[in-house]
Amino acid sequence: MDRIEAMRAFVQVVDSGSFTQAALALGRHKATISDQVKQLEARLGVRLLVRTTRTVTPTAEGLAYRARAAAILQQLDEAEAGLRRSGPSPAGRLRVEVPVALGRLVLMPEVRSFLEQYPRIELDLGCSDRSADLVREGIDCALRGGDLPDSGLVGRRIGAVPFVLCAAPRYADAHGLPAQPQDLAAHRRVGYRAPARRALPDVVLQRGGRQVAVPVPARLVTNDSGAVLAAGLDGLGIVQIAEFVAAHHLASGALLRVLPAWQCPALPLHLLTPGTRHRPARVQVFIDWVQGVLARRLVG
Image 1 (cartoon, rainbow, N blue to C red):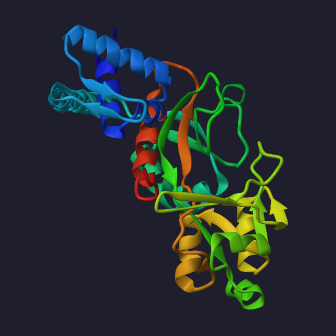
Image 2: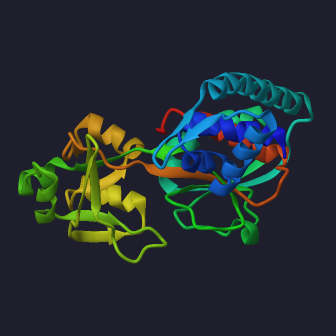
C-alpha cells in the first residue's frame, strides 16, 4: 500500500463527502479509493469512516487522523513545489488544448504572466471545442468540460463552470420572457451542439433541491460557442452560456437573465494528461498556473 496516496484518498473522501467525488477530484477509480481507505483502516486498526448507502461520515478517530494527514500532505506538496522552483527553469514546447471560450476569454488575458514567469517554455495553446486525441496528437494536457468517457488518460476534476440562461432585450420585446420553467417550451433557443452529441439536450434548471428538464425548440443550432453568443445578442433566441461569457453582456444590459430564480447545473471541468506517471516540469507548472487562474471562475 502506498501510504501517502492512501492518506490523500482518505482526506479527499472526508473533504468531498463521498467516494465518487473523491475519485473525480483525484482522477482515480471509485473502487481504488475505497480499497485505499480500507487498507488504511486495516493498517491503523481503527474505523475511520461510517459508510451508509447515502453518506460517508468520519468517526472521531477519522477526524483526528484527517487533520494530521492533511498537514503531512501539505508539507509534502510544499516541499515538492519548492524543489521544482529551485531546480532549472522548465523549458521546451508545451501543447495545451482548451475550449474556445475558456481560452479566449479567461486564459488569453492572463497568459502573459505565465510566459513571463517561464520564459523558456514555448506555449502552443489550441482553442477548440472538439475532443482531441492527446496521445496521437502529442498534446501535453487539456481542459475538457462535461462527463469523461473511459480512456487511458489521467483526468482530474478541478471544478465546475457555472452557466446562466439569458436573452437579448430584442428577443424579450418580441416574445416576452418565461415566468416558469415550463413556459420555455413555448419559446425558441439557440442551441450549442457538443461534438459528441447528435441531439440537443433538454434545458435543465434547479431550485431548492428541485430539478426540471424542459425540451425547448431550437431556432438555430451551432457547434461554435462564440456563434451561440452572437446569435443570442442578436435576439435570435434564448441561450444557455457560461457565466464568464455572459457576465460582461449582463452587466451592460446587452443580455437579460431568464428565470433568475432558477440555476443551470454547472458543467464539470476536467484537466487531462496522457497516462504517464511522471509529468515534465513544464506541464506541472502550467497545471499549477491554470488552476490558479480558474479558481476565481469555478464552483465546487
